[in-house]
Length: 364
Image 1: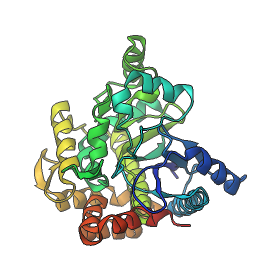
Image 2: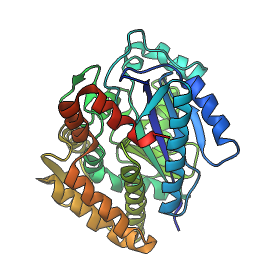
Image 3: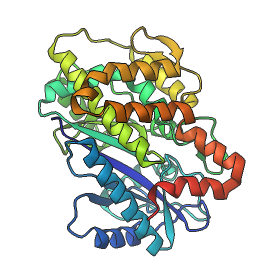
């Protein structure tokens, strides 16, 4: 069975408000003490108001659910001990009173020196799903075949409508913020693994980026693991949605691998079309239309989501995950994306209701 794992980035906010707090050193120290020798990874992120967790390598969706639930509760408990809370939002709804503080360490400080304005607006959090693929040529095939589905994934996972005290007008502001980096957005087409290596190496050798860690495409070959890493999703409000995306992405990658091996024709979506469609998906979420991968024309968002589920249903059946993932997709279509739920909470209950929603998924 294909292995997979999940990384999630979180925002640390006040115990009684929405402003970020730069306490990742204290929260991580407490969280690591609570984790002990248990499975999972805990690490800082770019800003001192951010942390990241990672599951171990998993084979079953139940494993992903268990590890994500445990790690979410653990960091929530650690944050409470440090006098703050953990928010599962793709972008910080407010800025703090002082300057944004960058995590200490060479990689973070180098980035801050390169692009200080962008760093100070990088309070954004994603969910990354790694799916195991040992063959790098096959991994590139998957990256190419994944491109038509990126607008739908972006829209489904939209959970960052608010930024710096205002509504951005986008369902996924994180997607737009990431697009300002030199190498971001939908990944381009590659001929094979050799082409991928050569073109990414050229970016580094030309001094455009410091390393492959700065390939901020929505999907890429992981530099650390033998995986395809899908990065199109905002971090999710609840465990249910996060587990859904893990199952959905493993099934999608499995389906694309089968298509590649069976010689199915590649749908070559022009870069400008997929980039524009991702932008529209980030703006509208599931409220309007999305680019349909089968005909490359706009279709109601619910129809595109249903087409995605039907596309991967055989792979979900093989792992016994179809009912679980389909149920979560139905709930997503019924109650809306995280972005729509954030807006509703703010409109109906104000900042306190929004803070309650953002921290519900990590309460100890």
